[in-house]
Length: 133
Image 1 (tube, rainbow, N blue to C red):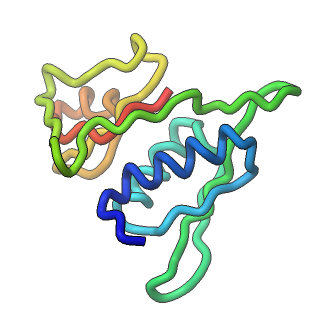
Image 2 (tube, rainbow, N blue to C red):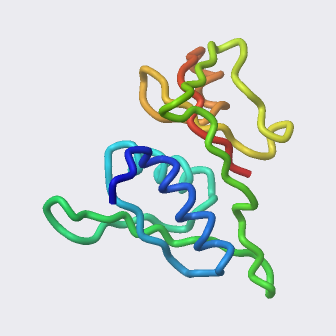
Image 3 (tube, rainbow, N blue to C red):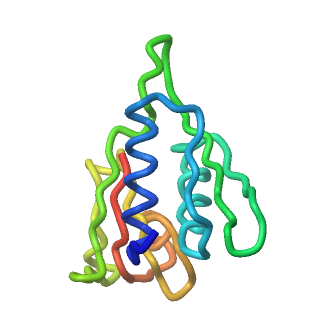
């Protein structure tokens, strides 16, 4: 795997798995993907996050959530905002609101990865990684 945008890779894997109604999806574990998975879990977009494998080949196992008897995915969309070719930063006054607060923006701040809501509360700006709704 030669992709150096681990975040876009993670979002794509989650998007594809939820469209295909998979129970779980595997994502290569990095500090960044762990932090994003934690935010998604705290915000209720994924059910569970565990690790498997050892050494260099550690993967995060993300348990996806669906609602209703038709198993409609909880995550309707994931959008990468800041990417290696074009970084997007936002100060605390300009933090984006996703769908009027229905969705979340995941922000990388000096105090770690958090949602736009938490960053606003902490008075922090940072790199806008992605939108989830």
